Length: 318
Image 1 (cartoon, rainbow, N blue to C red):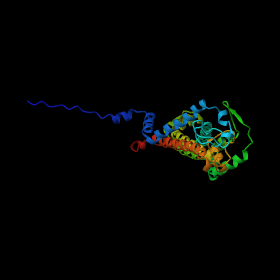
Image 2 (image 1 turned 120 degrees about the vertical axis):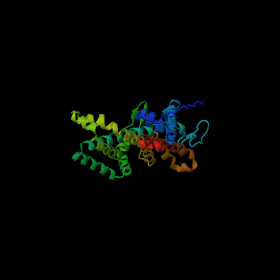
Image 3 (image 1 turned 45 degrees about the horizontal axis):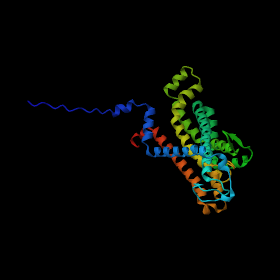
Image 4 (image 1 turned 45 degrees about the vertical axis):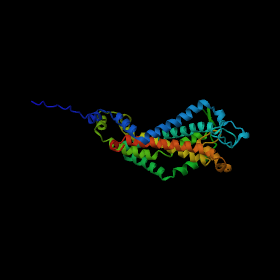
C-alpha cells in the first residue's frame, strides 16, 4: 500500500508582515529602498563630515590668513585646493564657507517652515475672513519676484549691521540679513500646501470629537492637525534647504550676500570671477562650485526619497 507524501506548506507571511509594520517603519523601508535618496544621504553625510571634521584641523584664523607671496598658487601638497587672490588657503575657506552656507540654508528654512506652517494652519482651520486676508497676503507675496525682492532688500540693508560673535566665530551682519530675507520670501508655497491639508483634516471625526469635548483650538491645531501634515512639511523643509543654499550662492555671487571676512561658497565664487581668475586659476572656482553642486543634488535626492517614502502609492514604484 503506497503511502501519501505530505508536502510542507510554505506560508506567505509577506502580507501579514506588511500589515504588522507601523507607519514609521513603512516610511523608513520605502526610503531605504530609494537608491537615489540613499546615494544623496551618503554624499550629504560626506559633505557634513568634511566641514565639521575640517574645522578641527583648520582654525578660522588660518582660513582668513593671507600671504600675497603665495597668491593664486595651484593645488599642491601644502595647499591641496590652491590659494586665492590674496594668498588664503582655499581648502580651509571651503570648510568654513560651507558652514556658513549650510547654516544659512537650514536657518532660512526654519523661518520659512515656521511662518508658512503657522499661516497655512490658521487660515485653513479658522476659514472665513481670516482665511481670506491671509491668503490674499500670500498671493500678493507670490506675485512679487522673490529674487528681485531679495536683491533689493540685501542692497538696502547692506553694511547696516555690525559683525556678530557666534560660537567663537565672528560673522558679518549680512549673514543674519540673508537668513531673514530668504526665510521671509519663501514661505508662501508651504502655507498653501498646509492650508489645503488642514481644510481636509479639520472635517475628520477625531477633530470633530476634540471640538465636542471642548479642547482649545490651539491644542487641536498643534496636537491633532499639524502631526497629520508633517509629511508635507518635512519634504518642503528638505527641498527648501537646497533652494536656500543655491539662492545664497548666486546672491553672494552678485556681491549682495555674505560679506568678507566671513567666507561662504557663494562669495568665494564672487572673488573667483574677478581679475580673469576663472581662466587663469580654475581651482579657485572649481572646488566651491563642486561642493555647492554635491550639496544641492544630495539634498534634492533626499527630498525626493522622503516625498516617495511618505506616499503609500510608491510601494510599487521603488
